[in-house]
Length: 64
Ligand SMILES: [Zn+2]
Image (cartoon, rainbow, N blue to C red; front, side, top):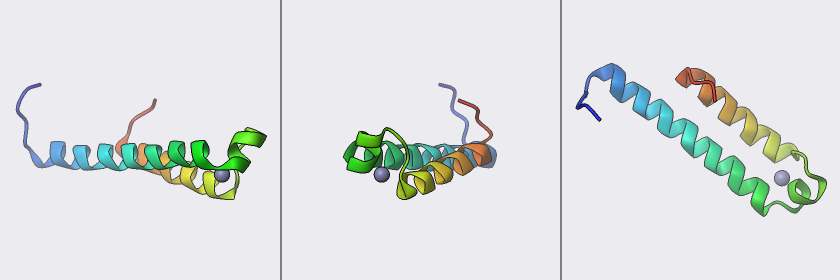
């Protein structure tokens, strides 16, 4: 990976980390939450975590 420490790259890295953190929190929740696992759909908390993740992803300008 080429060394690039410009402000834009640093900003992007911060946004990417936010996306990863939000995604991890969502996944961890769905794995630990009985409601999510049994019903196979998002409970209120999962919906919120998913929203946070999607918002962060949109800010990072990434479509996955
Ligand atoms: Zn849940």
